[in-house]
Length: 226
Length: 305
Image (cartoon, rainbow over all chains, first blue to last red; front, side):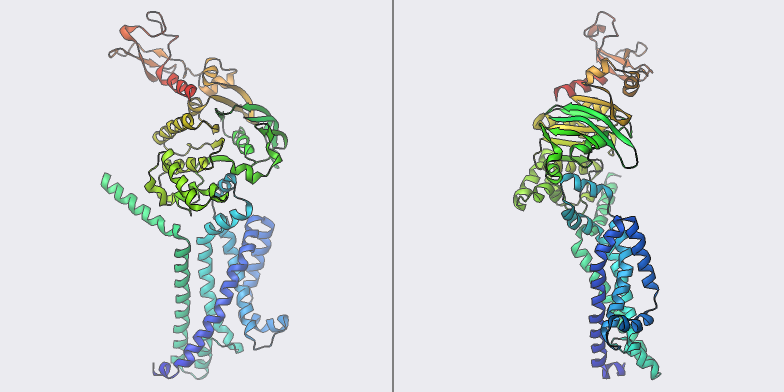
């Protein structure tokens, strides 16, 4: 603990880097998955191609990808862009499947009745399909958020600043306290991200938190009648 | 007035859902398409608002070919109510009712004010306006569905088995409500059902369909009941099993002036007034010409609607 207080600036600085670098892939994954997920849900051929591609991309070991990317992107070896791009690829790979499932989860009845009452294709997508896919999209996004925060640490092996530095440095110095602090702060970042996502979900999808209340009301009504 | 001119619909998988269908649906009347599953009745209904486009033939509304304008504009001008209500689960009741006016650009305050009035029209408590559809019972959701269908004050209301998924008591309630609404609002209603009793209750014009949307018989409930055009129709309306032919059951003791009527299978169908043992419109002891309350009262209401 003394070490933490002595090195608080370092730890907080690394935490800030960690937050900054992991937000980008989460946001990119979310945005990019929407058109791909929609395509995958709409066309069987697109689904096969996109989901297979996503599966293959996700199996590439992260360290290998970090090292390969400079050659592909023409970036410098130590550029943080390598790690960010790699994490974006993973995020998209996971989110595309999640988004395809999310769009598939929207009731066909609701889509068809929306068309029948006169939604145009575009307004139906943005005001019906996208919000109703929200709960399943959010579930995928939470997985991506946690996995991005944890994978980012690997970037420290190629010199990109993040909380992973504390693992690498602690290991090299044979100093477990530093490793534990690194793990603790990584978990903290992941938990904060997850909490923010859940709260955003409740704020933006108020109808999802209403459902349990109805069961409660029904239960009370049942008791009253009993 | 809705006119079908030689309309045929063949789906890409080869199914001939509708084969050369022609019919006039009169204005301000309820036309019911009734038939078994897969007879093409829903396809017919969905062609009216271009959810499905015919393979050949044309459909005209008040003399104008519906294919000539935009499908979205057409759909916004026609009310649509489906089974399981089809409400938007993420919008509150009031926004669901106001869906189409909001799409058409009516300002929110006006659309909401009108939506509240529509809740009154369909017999729903305004207190439900700010609930989500999942917080309502099936019958209440169906009422919201009807309110949404009426929101743009359409001349035409399409109803695709709207009461198919609610329990019999609620269904009865909703059917009576629809009859009342139709008396007040005078819409051209096109109603699809597989329930012949519902068809006879609600329809001014009943269209009995066979596979491929072939018209087995079209007419008022009374005409169909009195003269089934074919064995198929007789079977479909239950006449062949004696379900529609009623007789006085002499084995049951008479109470007051009521006489019990039974159908051909011996099931109790209802009672009829028979002051002093004389049936109305018949000679003493006559039974065959009597009009049984259980069946005829339904058709009478439909005729008045």
